Image 1 (tube, rainbow, N blue to C red):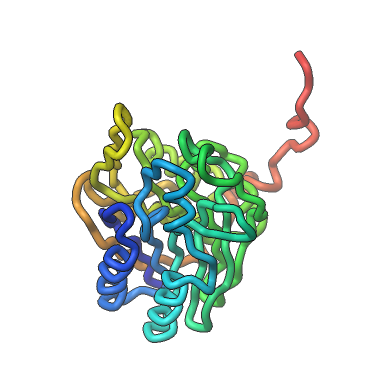
Image 2: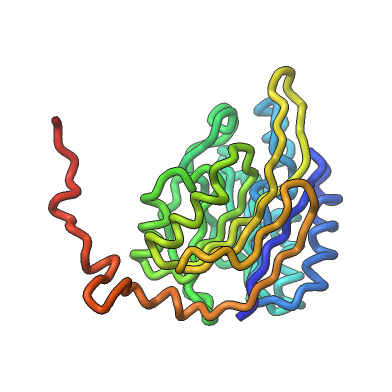
Length: 266
């Protein structure tokens, strides 16, 4: 199967402009699964809860969701995309999974970063794995990379591919995802953005790009630059993620010593 990321540079608050720009690129892709960045439709640096309220959309009823659904149906592709989601009076930093038959599911970010805690509710969805026919996929969002439990749970639940919409500003994630793939023997698609947002005095954010597709053996199959929009496409064999052996006598899941992992007080 062919998988892809879109590395974009959204303009804050310009939802239709950002979505249509991504849609034009999606229409040109020859891939089965495409991952877009975190908050790809809105931009990242909210200044107030009012802004979040004005720019958030319900899923899958909202305009952005419906636009992606139409593309997925027409192109017969699966799309993972990050949006600001409105649900029951609360706002979530969410990732949507959409396929040729429409909306499949949403993941709400579990580990909120910095000022996200002022505007978004901590995610209340589980780390779910979806069998989309061509592979089994799970979702995590940006700062979730720092918590190894997330990728491990998705791998234990059978994910072949971890889809990772991001708006990275810290420098460590691209290299850390190599470790996440190695320790779980999964593929990962990190779709980051580029550009700068400086909407809050003293809090200039420069997004680091470097979107990437990493294999279960830690090999970087494709990595974008740190400052340009980019489409990355790679052909993978997702079944490689189902072999959890390191040697004939070592299996990353069977060798776990779960009884020794229980927390204790020193």
